[in-house]
Image 1 (cartoon, rainbow, N blue to C red):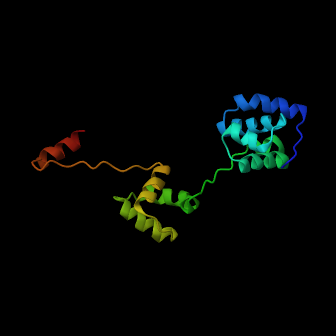
Image 2 (image 1 turned 135 degrees about the vertical axis):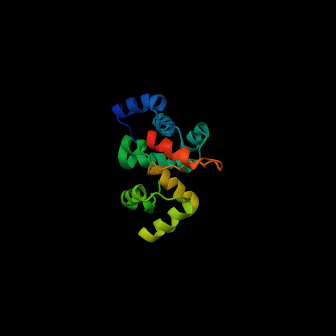
Image 3 (image 1 turned 90 degrees about the horizontal axis):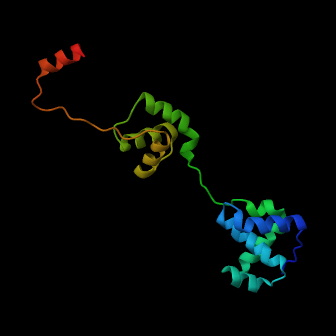
Length: 155
């Protein structure tokens, strides 16, 4: 069991942020600290908060190690694509040489960077670069070529 002592200032902050912090997971952590400051055992805190005893211990260790700043930290795993390292050069290339399909983009990306990705991943990457699929229009089969040339010259 971890014995943690809370300063008066920290208790005031914990009391306020357990209801008013914008992130719900921080509110929960503050509630755990508040219950611990009232002298409750870990098992009872876990039952009241609906979490396991190991989580209570983890939150108390976080507080012990780094104070309230450690409790407020976001520790989400956010992987970053290797393609992002090449995004500037790829965006420049695709702006100068637009592709007609995702398959073509896959081939070019692999040739330029050596990174191989599937269609969905390349589609998402191109969207992040601000590129969207082009809508292809069709030319009517009965169009008069002479009238079209006149229209081009007059407009």
